[in-house]
Image (cartoon, rainbow, N blue to C red; front, side, top):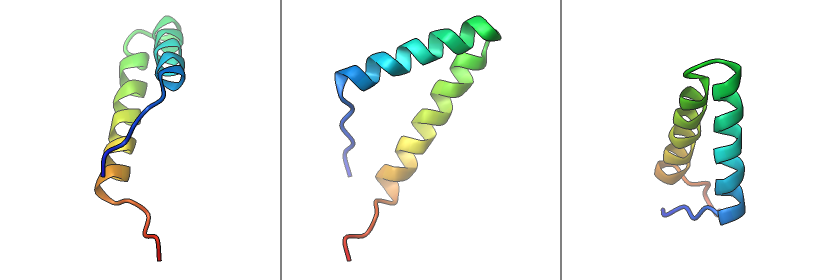
Length: 50
């Protein structure tokens, strides 16, 4: 399954990563990694249509 991310959502993610990085160095990276892990899980295990 291929996941498409809208450009506005991608921009929000960048802003969130920057915000978390300002709060605590490295936190933005951890947040981005968790978002990626979640998108990977959705891609590997898509919801069934049944």
